Amino acid sequence: MNIALIGYGKMGKAIEEIGLQKGHTFPLKVNADNLSDFTAENLKGIDVAIEFTTPDTAFDNLKLLFENKIPTVCGTTAWLDKKAAAETICTKNETAFLYASNFSVGVNLFFELNKKLALLMQGYPEYKASLEEIHHTAKLDAPSGTAVTLAEGLIEKHTTYDQHKLVDNTSEKVNENVLPIVAKREDPAPGTHSIAYDSPIDSIEIKHTAHSRKGFASGALLAAEFLAGKQGVYSMKDVLF
Image 1: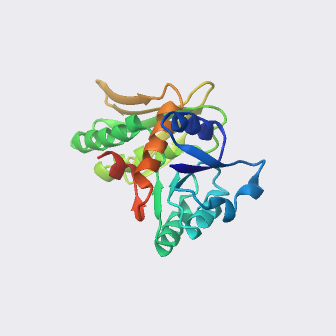
Image 2: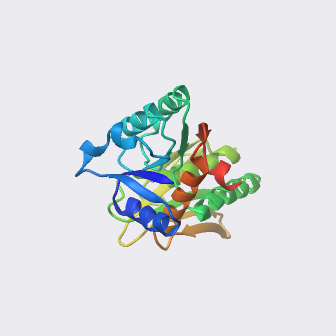
Image 3: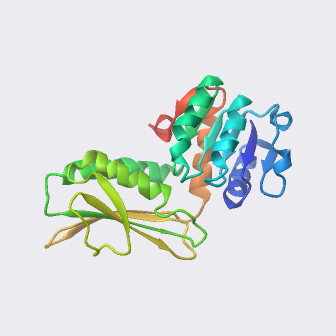
């Protein structure tokens, strides 16, 4: 496939490395230094785009891609107030869109495990849930998109909780209906997410730890391979399950 990389930072370069090994080509690679190359003319012949940029630019990037009928995988987080509008533009232009807060196969399995555990734990109110995430210091959004997805999954299945809140530590007092999230920024840290259920007598915890960006990059490429030639709005569940 001919893949456009909209965002050619560490993640884009990791995607390119894996994609070249699989026989894909990357005729268009856009970063802050060559924004003038991101044009309709240069999108001709592109089979699918992978967008990893910033919250401020993601929507406009997607709009241009969809208007040129480019199926697009997006991994940019913290812009989701415009996601519904992006989906509308995608549908209007009869192309395809797949957004995920995290493309790692392991993390997406973890999302499902989190929901199953939350459903089980809601019958035991003595266990109080909390969430912690650790990322590198260059990570701008807190909580991370992955942490928000985990929180929303837990809230969906556990009737005690109806909202989440960023806190400094898990001992900070919050209302019973609030799921606390601690966001730490440390180097080096590709990403660790854990959900704990603590009672006066014991604790239960599930955790996912990324060892490198390779899992995220390979998952994004897998999503791109899935999306090419399709129309509609998809998620990683459509790719994996």
